[in-house]
Image (cartoon, rainbow, N blue to C red; front, side, top):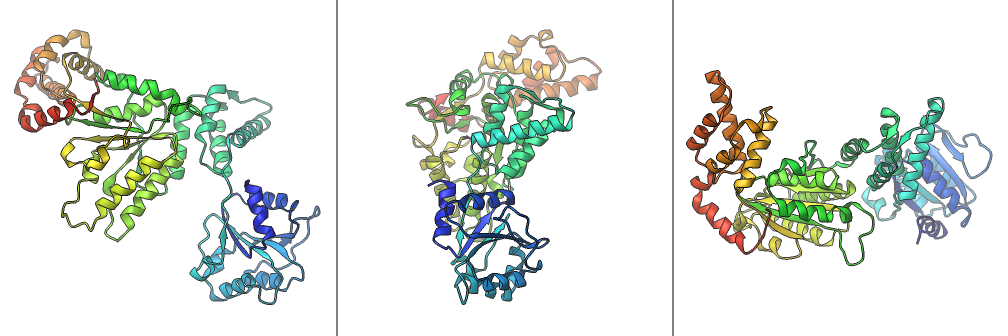
Length: 495
């Protein structure tokens, strides 16, 4: 059934109490006006400032009752014909016993007509004895055509306010903007569209990052997601050629409309690898590769000492991520949040969290691409690794000589140094067994040495620093070797 038909059915059934949580009061009034075409009733609205008014007639009637909740409920009960009453400011009064009693008498039809009472507000919390008597009606969110109409209305409004100056529009960017406004109610769609237009009188590709930021701030009510402002480009990551190609092949399907026949929307990857080899950079680069926002889920903030709160926090965080879609959801070092529960005394919380996460991964329909990173494969639950949980499991190994050359070039250039002034092939050979993070820190340490000596950085200083550094592949040789051997036949190499 359509949104309107659902509402008509509730009215025809004389549903005594309906709750609508929304900030768009005008839309609620318009919906009920349309419903009256199929199920006629007298329609009234009440607010604390205007009192009770009849709104289904063409004329503007004066308030029939003073703006007082108790007086209004008494007047509704005394009305001699059935009607629909939209109460916009009633929820603050629901904590009073007298108001609850009056509303219950109306709902249970004690000496009154079969009215339909509608409580409207951004958040309406009913007392327990009224909750069981109410029907919660959820207005549908605007579809693509409705969102586009709102954007056009705001563009026309801008032109009127600026002497006919038209908004500069990039057609493809507008389509992306409309697509990324999915999941918002009309009020928020209008507010964000207006903000983007009035910032510079244009709608173009440069508005997409700001839109993602505004949408995240609006929807991240759980507080367990973190918006990553500094995402990396694929070109900022050395090596990982196979992984980059894999992402590029799936970009169009993930960011487009309906996928081609036979193809599913990509759901996510697990990046396993040696510490410091760029897994976090790759997670950030995925968002840039798809052209969507990146949000990070911190498992440490989910856990709560009270029973059931941890699972509730996870549900809220994942729901927020789905509202921000399309996006990349990054869970860093996932093994620390989902470590196997072997008598650790957490009352089974870890298992319940894992169970909900696995269900969400399998059943979600939203365009949330999950990127999980892990360093310790033996700490991950087996259920997470089976085929179907992730689209693919990639292993990010220690960089080879070509990747190490690229890493030196990248990190030197970031520090305003000319990579061509250095012997990059020689430095790559000298840094055998080093991770990307260790190469960066060797450059930083060499820069300090050169600064203390009052000399420019050169190959000799860099080689000396590399010689004095013991990389993780040496310090933790057994663990690193075991991880690389495990991954050799079980995962896909990222490079």
